[in-house]
Length: 415
Image 1 (spheres, rainbow, N blue to C red):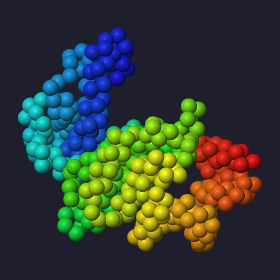
Image 2: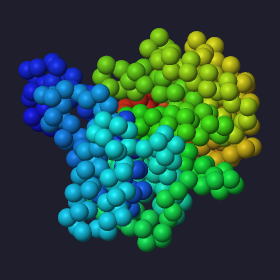
Image 3: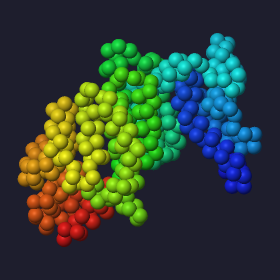
Image 4: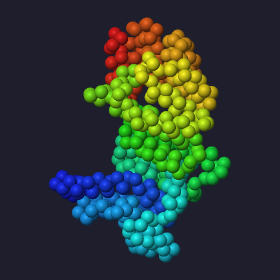
């Protein structure tokens, strides 16, 4: 890889070839890994062979040119590498014959379109199986489907690379030991399992979108949501989730200032929002006729995304959608956001009353955003000194540096 970068520094064509290799590997990684897992039953071998194919592309394409079918080339190299490994290990001839049949020529796609679709879906549903712990599902999705390096995943989870490697190994072992089927559920089972898959993507997006998150994770969540939307048409919560991601992610360029500090929604330059993403989200949401939890969240996000300013936001509509969401999928965070929406729609006293109700059970104790919401509503009520103190308390409770600075800035303004 270093050789390819060095060559690219001198030859623009070589640099373009290296970029094409990286793009092809990113787009076809899940397909290659999924197909090899299906045939070999060996998750580690499949991932290693997919990585080896990328290494070979980065070595060969800058000098030899990009092949006509980059994905087919990568699959052929990965398949050949798996064949060599299995042959040396003297694995049964049946698996060798199946591997040899994956791609008849180096440039041809490895299988029919229906089989490719099934393989990718199999991989997604297996990585997101409810028998695995939620964090394990997210990590396995990042590593196996998205091809994110283990070191990057470990950093996001605040653990060492060796610890994350062990967690991934345990997750794969559990899949094997528990004989978790490598298949896509059908009928009622699909309806039962799909929310769990979407929940993993939602958490993955959140880990990328949060103040201290890894932005690449949000991009991967969007990419996987697009993939699911194309592979499982007719499931309304998938386009709803994708629309929600697009609305939220449309603000990514405006969420931070030149110093890297967070810019609150009411101060963002809305001209910097990605309006093409907003338009795509609106088109997706326009096709959704059922209001599940993700559709309701997407409708709330669409109101914010299409408002010219915070003042021009249709806050009664936002409050109404939060009422529906609280009835459909109640949670402490939904209750908190509902209180804020009502505070903007009907006055800070109404918001503070709902906030007190949301905090009464103790579920929001120690949650910095709950204190920040109280501080904001208190400031809007006119009690600047108390609001400043609440913002400072919220800053003490957050673990994200960017969020802490933003909260302290609000406190300083009110003081």
